[in-house]
Every structure is written in C-alpha cells, then in structure tokens.
Amino acid sequence: MVATWDGQDAGWQPSATGPGEWDLELGPLIRALRAPAIAAGLPDTADDQGRRGYVWHCSARVAAQDRVLSDSEWAQVARDLLHGAGVVSRGDKGGSRWVAIRHADDHIHIAVVLVRQDTGRRFWPHRDYPKLRAAAREIEQQLGLTLTAAADGTAARAPVRGEVEKAARRGQVPARPELVRAVTAAAVTAHDVSSFEAALRSAGYLVEVRYGPSGDALGYKVARPGDRTAAGYPVYYSGSKLAVDLSMPRLQQRWAGVSGAAAASADVLAEARYGVDRGRRAVAGARNGRLDVDADEIAHATQDVLMAVCGFELAGRDLGAAADRFERAARIPDRRVGEPSGASTGLRWAARQLIRHRRVLRQDEVAAGVALAVALAALLQEIAAWQRERGRVHQAAAAEASGEAVRNWTSAWPPPTLSTPLSQLTGVDHAPGAREPRTRTGRERGSRQPRV
Picture 1: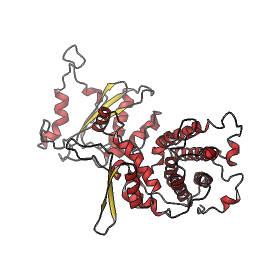
Picture 2: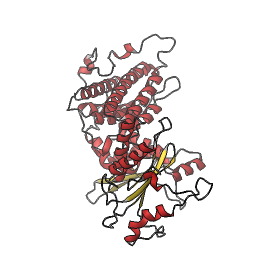
Picture 3: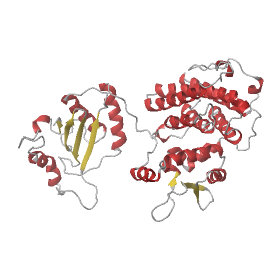
C-alpha cells in the first residue's frame, strides 16, 4: 500500500494471516473503502446485469528503461493522476475513498469508489481518459521518465483482437490497416465522391456511399472482398472508424481545394519536386514564426505525395514503408481541420498527377524520381523538426522514420555506371530551415500551382 484517501498510506497495509505473499487480512480495508457506497444504498457485490459499476480503476506503469520509483514517488504519482483526471481533487476531504497499491517495482494499481463521503452522492468522471493522459505526461516530464503520446487523436486505430485472430487464421493481414491504405490512396487520386467510389471499386474493394434526401453524400463504408461475417455478409468499416481524416466530410474538404480538371505537365516529376520543395520552405517559414501557413495541413498533404510514390521502385525496393511510417505524423492533432494554403494544395495537386500519370518509374525517369525523393526526404526532415518543437515526440519519430526510409531508398542511386551526386540532382538546399532554392528554372516560375 503506497497511498490512500486519508493520508495514512502504508498505515492501511493489510496484516499477514499466513506465510504466503497474498495471505492478507483484507476485510478492514475493503469495508472502509465501501462504507460510503453501502451508506448510499449501493450493492456491495458486483452487478451481474452488465450495468456500470461504481469503482474506477487505473494502472500506471513506467517504461522498462526508466528508473525504479520510491514508494513516496508512487504515492505522489497516484495523487497527481487522480487530481488531473478530475476523479479526486487535492485537499477534498469529502471526496471519494481510494487506494493505490504497488504490485511490483514498475507499476501501481489505483481503485476509487465513486461515491462522495460527505454527500453520499454517486458520480462519474467526465472525459477522465484524456485528462489522465495529460496528467501522465506532466508526471513523466517532472520525474524524467519516458514520454508517452498525448491523447490527440493521431494514433492509428489498431485492429481489435477478433480482427487480428481472424486474419491470422486466413493467413492475411488484418483488414483495417489494409483498408486505411486503400482508402487513402483512393482519396489522393479522386476529386469528388464519384471518382473516389470508382477508385475503390477499380482496386477491388466493396464500397457503399450513403446519401441524404438532398442528394449530398453523408458517409460511406468499405469492405475487403472475401471478408465476411459468419452469416455471409461483408464486414464493412465506415471511413470515420478507419481514421478521423478519412470521414466523408474530411475527404470533401480535401477535394474542395484541388481542381480535378488541372492538366498534367509534360514533366510531372519535376512539377512534383517543385511542389515538395515549396512545402518544405513553407514548413520552415512556420517554424520561424510565419503565421499564414498551417504546417500541420502541409504534413497531412505530404502523406498524399508519399502514397503517390509508393510504387516507385529502385534496386528492387519501393517507397511503401515511407508512407506507412509517416501515417501518425500526417494526422492533425485534436481532430482539428487544417487550413489549406498554396503549399498544401500544391502537394495534393502533385500527388494526384503522380498517381494518374506516374504510378511507376520508367527507366529514363529514375534520376528524376530520385531527385523527387531527395526533396521529399528534406520535407519530411522539416516536418519532423516542426513536430519535435511542439513536443510531439511520437509524430516527430514517425516523420523521421519515414524520411529515413526515403533516404535508404535513394541510397541505391547512382548505379555503378554513373557518378552523379544526389546533391546535383535538385539544385536545392535541403538543410532544415533553408528558405529558398539555390536555383530555379524558368519552367518552375511559370508553374500553374499557386504560390504560398
């Protein structure tokens, strides 16, 4: 016992009743904890009707590489977590009764009876999970522990246990991550709902769009062919359940800023390289205080470009890993809608043209493809710096890992018969924070893409 509601802490440690580790007299502690609930007329046994109970549980654990915390430090951790989550406020003597038990060196378990001692009223914490995550991050910084991710909505929705087991039985990857990638790719190449639906169908996926009485698209659901329930029905996933930025409203916002009728340049790769470098300069400007550019929106648009170049092959390797690793860095925190700019719109335009015209590299385009990848790696490096400066360590790590995958891909250039350095392929300074390219061609000045 490391902490309790009344400050007695270790004073509530149950006495031993035998030689075993768990031979303890728990009765006095349990009766004391439950006393307010019993006085309020609540049952002292578990509810077998599936209704919500009145005991709040939380486990807190340090990372394997972190130091061992003392009992007093764990006691303070428990109090800080309860206060931060809005479950038990500091100094509230009439609040809930609770205990924090240290089960091992690396973790504690907290249990709270959600009944106030002074009024006997039962209550439920509001938004306790995101508050708990914020409190945990503050504790990690104070104690020098490994930083965990914020509850900002950028983490991928992991497949549930049933999805994983079903896929394993069939020798497949789980449907959810596959569908995320398929829907993202379709969103990049599409310019409206009908072209989005057509792209998914042409890729072999089942898709149904839901329309309102006005004829407007309200949502959609998508399924992997052959993935069916026991009753034989397709297992559909709605876009919003795959990822926040794949809901129908978010996709329509994405398409609104990019013209679907824009003609492709004869040199799609060069146009895309210019758009990527422009995005890098915009993020660098945001890092230096420029307020008219939403760097998070540029990061989101960068994912479109990564999806567009997935099929580029060099020495038997493609860029699929770069897109997968960047996924978390691409999502805008806290479900915020990004503010489009010329730079982000240019990236989406470039991605669409690449998918339409350059899904794979021809032999005579490899050098231009590598030049685009070099510029893309520099943009990813700039995005990683932007994320890191905002304390988003996991998003920064995702951007860095993606950039490393792109750099590894370019390492196969030049082939042994050539000696052109990578630095001479673009003529652009790709150091973090660089503002302007060293040279710019006349074609680039006349680009149809709007300037930032």
